[in-house]
Amino acid sequence: ESAKQSGRAVNRIVYFADFQGVISSILNRKIWKVIPLLKSLVNTVECHYPEIVDHITLFNVPRVASAVYNVIKGFLDPVTAKKIELFPGVPYDRFKELMSEDVIPVEYGGKNRVDYPPTASK
Image 1 (cartoon, rainbow, N blue to C red):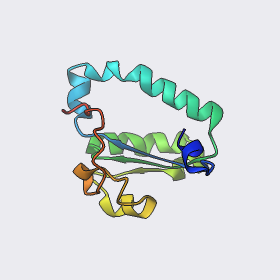
Image 2: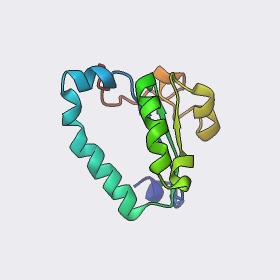
Image 3: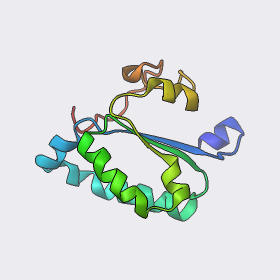
């Protein structure tokens, strides 16, 4: 839809995910409500857009998740593994390298005031 409105083809996707609250969501089992959506998104991207995923940036990632990812990364395709970045906090400078401040949500230091759905921790 945004490609139609802007008149420009979408040639790359940059994905950001806030992992704040993931551990507590796993412990209180709320995370399972999100799994079907995540599976659907991953399937759609893998089937229809595998080459346009430019970066996957996961932030507010707990140390234990980073440690697990370091093990899993060895099993990923090197091209895919190179696209995935994990940060313990909010990587505002990295956000600015990949997108305009106008699209970075206010709660992460940007100027975008769009009301996004609440995260697992809210």
